[in-house]
Length: 220
Image (cartoon, rainbow, N blue to C red):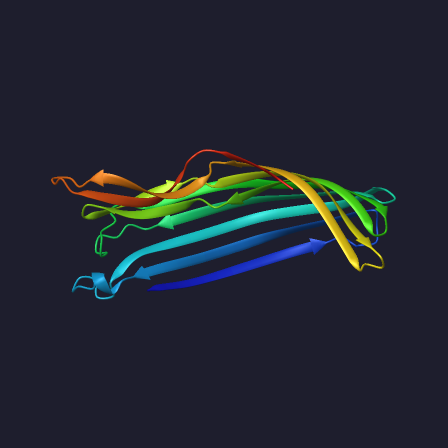
């Protein structure tokens, strides 16, 4: 069974929306704690069957703008800087003891830039670049009689896209077309790896999430 608690807060300040240049800035905070218990690990020294705790804290600042360069032509930009801390506290009395604290910190900047041009009130073409991040994560695996923590670094995605959005016949027909290229780096993959249990000839498996490289994705 798992028990979790979390809290999140966000504040944002916007400029007036009637000018050629409009801006926004803000801040974000998130905290979560997950406690894992399992009936199979209940014993006198661990009456709740406590297995592990994972704590995530994320703090971010963000901002953006929309700038009408010419009639129908708008440049938009966004940026977000986030700092995330993940903790896996050590526990000597857990069902499977974890002798070491697991702590991982990452600071990521995620930008987005878009150029829109309205050819007509119901017809628009655009080009954009954006960068996204998938948080790093711990895998808690049992090797012998102890837990071992394997950490996968944050996965990153760079996205390039061009397209058009259109409405015809009094908006009875909607036609949107786009083409994109994605570059995924430090890609996370969950897989099982065999190993020989120490002191035996038995083969066991470790299932964990690791960084495996990069991928390119094209599409439309």
